[in-house]
Image (cartoon, rainbow, N blue to C red; front, side, top):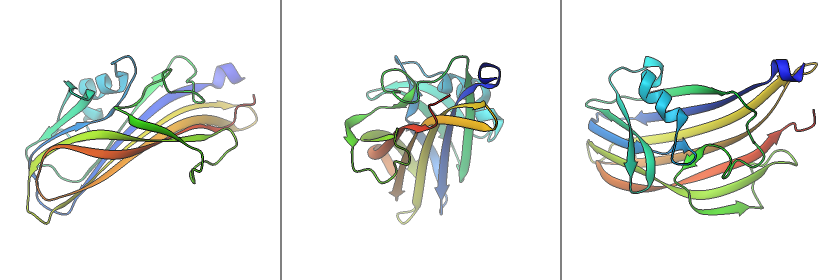
Amino acid sequence: MYDRSLRSSYDYDVMLTTDSTLSNMTLYLPLPVINNTSYVGMDIVEHHFNNNEPSWEYALVDTEHGLMLSMKNKKPRSIDLSTIIFSNQTIDTMNPLGNEMVLMPKYKLTHNVNASRVYSRTSEQFDYESRMYACYETSSNANVSISIYLNALNEWWIGGWQSNSYWEVMEIKLSGPQNGWTTVNGELVTGEGTYEI
């Protein structure tokens, strides 16, 4: 029953919100990467984030901070883009660092033993710094928020759906026009859910 029903997937989500008119936007965003490869990024470039927003151009770029997702738009608006990639093997949700795709880059990675977001006895939180590149024209009082989420999930059916996962979140708020790299804080929570089968 477990083997027949098991599904493993990576869910990547980018949310951009703005209260002003923006123009000529270029973003370089962290991607789920392992061994300088991003299957999520390759899927986004091939399928244009499932064609949800055709005005955007997508590409994979090698930056000074590693492989990233390039997103370009002449007149961007608020968007919420997501894609799911299914894995043909069980994801190591307990120890993803070094073993699975995680959002990159990661700097100053620390194990947060006092984390408030840790929900189960097997879960652990890691805090880190990352980088985002943003370049666009707008008014001096414009506000832009960018959020990136990754959720890696194993789920199966034994008398009901059960699952385990790791997930990450990065959020940044920018004001006024931008032209360069920005430091953004991130959180990784591992070992969420059920591990007894």
